[in-house]
Image (cartoon, rainbow, N blue to C red; front, side, top):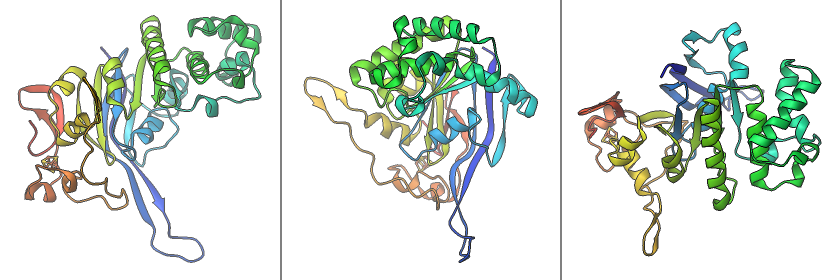
Length: 320
Ligand code: SF4
């Protein structure tokens, strides 16, 4: 599979406090640090981690909504200069967690779906209406949905409208930021199935951002695990779920509730995530890691292959 998008050493920092009339020390919040991964044509890559891990920030970087403070992005092998971004803008679309917030309540569905095309100046008004009608059918909504408004639909139907809108410019990649977490469990599987079906039909890639590993296990090819803005593990789904190499990934997997005879609650991960304003030295996971040793407090571990698994990378001095 050829590479569609690549992130190379991406860092994102936000200034916090300081400056202004009263001066004070300006500090920096590190939302992402030295993150590198690629997404292949037709691939689904999940970005997972607890809240505050930097998942959405990286999704925004890929979608062009956040300018990184460090590193570079490539699209189909080309560095993202102004001309490449022009092509990439249509080719990379986004679906958000809250479909209601993402849809202008004053616009009918036909105009909402056609809006990205109108903004790009693609096609005549009649061609854009025809594209909206085609997409409404593809996402499983009735044709009369075109003349109705977002508030007339359920949450799941609104997410279908948001997906149709993202598909309008014929993207190669959809960045889906927690697209299921505002929906009822029964609706989640319908939207997951729709996303799979659309992927096959349009040969789409997805960057699927989620805190829910059970959902990830149903959809994705590879998983990137983030902790405090750092990429700590990157592997094929089967390898990661069967034999996680990083202690944080193991803890995340153990925290997923299991369905057995009795519904069991998953174990929680010990301690709290440190502040991104003052990340710990060495391995950022060391304050919570049951395997931490002195070297972990001193040296940042590299993202290297796990023993015997060249495609399974983990950033741990004691990777398994
Ligand atoms: Fe734990 Fe050390 Fe590995 Fe970090 S490097 S995850 S602290 S064992």
